[in-house]
Image 1 (cartoon, rainbow, N blue to C red):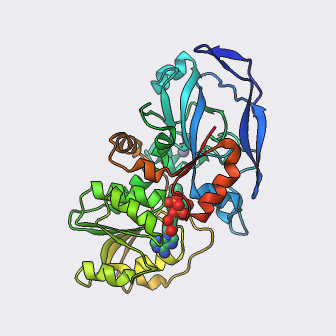
Image 2: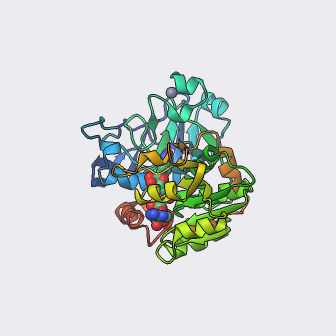
Image 3: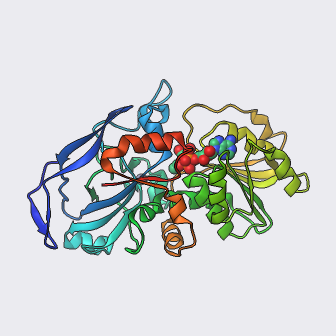
Length: 371
Ligand SMILES: NC(=O)c1ccc[n+]([C@@H]2O[C@H](COP(=O)([O-])OP(=O)(O)OC[C@H]3O[C@@H](n4cnc5c(N)ncnc54)[C@H](O)[C@@H]3O)[C@@H](O)[C@H]2O)c1
Ligand SMILES: [Zn+2]
């Protein structure tokens, strides 16, 4: 943990030495604690957190998924004694002139940081692919980059920081993070005007993908989810057709929409292994599959669908590089049903209820904590 700094006055409001924060002690062991407020070093920014969203990936980390805590094939990536939370919005509380110049921000500005804190030295960063940074420090997963489930946090010099309108509700502004991810998933799809695009999953990520796909003006945007209420929100985000596979045969509907050929593009934002085979099945030959999900368990499918059967283009997607300005503009434009997407706001102390709500998926869309 960082050492406490001296108590100071910022714009006549005292900045306390101690703060409330959620601290990760291990899988299924997150605790609300009183910890020292972080002290910004030269060039860094102290931010008073206004809202932090809980992501499906946070919930997978909470439940001990191998992708985060390691297994016989890979080392652990996330660490203990970390403050979680990477969907962050806050107000600048303190910064020096170097930070003011570097980030182009001022005390009182409302800001959202990109979730990854790149090292700016590795081969990926040097080519602009900073989202694949070799060091891969992300807010909320590493001790060097404590996250936003706290009253205050620090943006290090390497962070990418964007200003966002103060007119938005805090939870809406924090949605810039998942929306940037969704838009990157859409960019990876390389959409064309004639495409029939299927977005699987109408959670926060899928809803943003529906909105992003619609913004690209393809022939049709189809949303699939097993929860009708989420499909209603998908329509408000721009879905032309919605399918609930619990009530109808999703494959037949998509074949019906495409002259029997199948979809041109399938973007998976479900986190459900079953949605992978669903996509491979409903894509046309030479179609494009974009995988955005993070899975708790390995997925197995007949890999020859990719080769012999359909010669598919399969593209992974990670985080939201270069899509933050578009995501922020989309939220600020008022085009999205933000009140429906940001369904639930809870105080920091109710973080456990928040995690359980996201794990359940049926009773909320985006859950945010308000420290
Ligand atoms: N790659 C990355 O960088 C990155 C970043 C953020 C999130 N993610 C992942 O993206 C995925 C989606 O995130 P989210 O927050 O929207 O999750 P979520 O759990 O809130 O939403 C998933 C939705 O998919 C629906 N669903 C489940 N099975 C389905 C199926 N077979 N067909 C259609 N819909 C189905 C669920 O009902 C739910 O509404 C998660 O796996 C998450 O971990 C990846
Ligand atoms: Zn790097």
